[in-house]
Image (tube, rainbow, N blue to C red):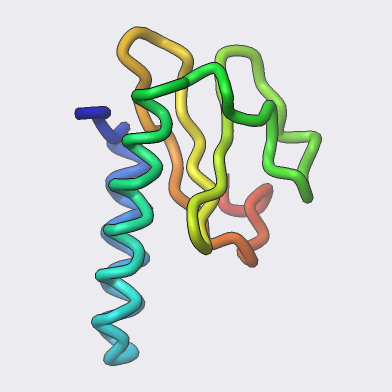
Length: 98
């Protein structure tokens, strides 16, 4: 199981609370499913991620990778084991949310 950093956990909690406040329980379920798929992909091949989300090449940082899973960009460390450091809705202004 790949852990979430405290920041990623807070982001996940905020997204779920947002969806639930809008009555979009299915969106919360889809988010959690996407996160589980991302965890499996990261565990299988951590080096396969991108250096930065495609729309934001300036977010490249040594030791971090990004994957898109469903509607979410997921950032993670290349540590052993990897740690998910961020979960972002793909259409969000990610640089202003870091």
